[in-house]
Image (cartoon, one colour):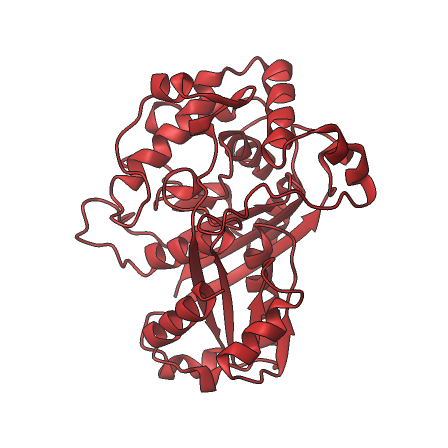
Length: 358
């Protein structure tokens, strides 16, 4: 839990604000029965607006949309969105939990969560479109190339497609290097109303639009294992902002597993069904590629403390502020528009945000 206040205070300090400025608090996690209440008490604040929406790893993209709406409605001047987890240290990942509602048809029969659910989707996808494990592996290779430019990344050594395929199978067809990391970590984002921008010491990034949805909770209830909720949230967020795919300078896409990325890119409309592997081939999303994606190394190589969505927002914000100029090629030159997409649960929830450089 200590990760959240540390990250929150650091984000506020970077923005030149204090806890006394915060009148909206947004958080999610599994460390408390009511994380927003516990965190507010721990920080010693009494915010007028609380949001504890928990829809998995996409929660924080949803929080950003909710915070922006609260600002527009005049309910909030300064919102703090924060998350933290020590799942690696306390070995919380994979602990058994009660099987509720439709999970009663999965958990008692041994389906490992979440990797088993993503493996089912990957198996269906590979079967339906003739995609290969080599094409999945390209996602991990690209992420590692970006991680090599990030001194904070958990893994920075280069890998090849052959390395991915040679790593142990975790849940067929997903290998170890197809799977996200299990780490500790925390992050935070500050959202401020425009009339507070003179008080902010960093360059603001504008929330242009947002959309969120859910298609299911348990994998056995997913309507189509090869189509995610991004098929709804992506077009809707872009339409609300009048931004086209070709206008975007970079992507921050949830990469819990390599299959997550291919399904998301296709559902968002960047390529046709079954073409995600070819879309990311030949370094297209890697450093120097035409559409940079997950420029911090992603959940596959940078960090993944259980719910990764907050780090997508942080990286996109820093790229749009041009914070990485002069740091070994990590900066996406001229970045003006970014699409951030979070995925939660077992491909269960989707939340898409479009950000721009002010």
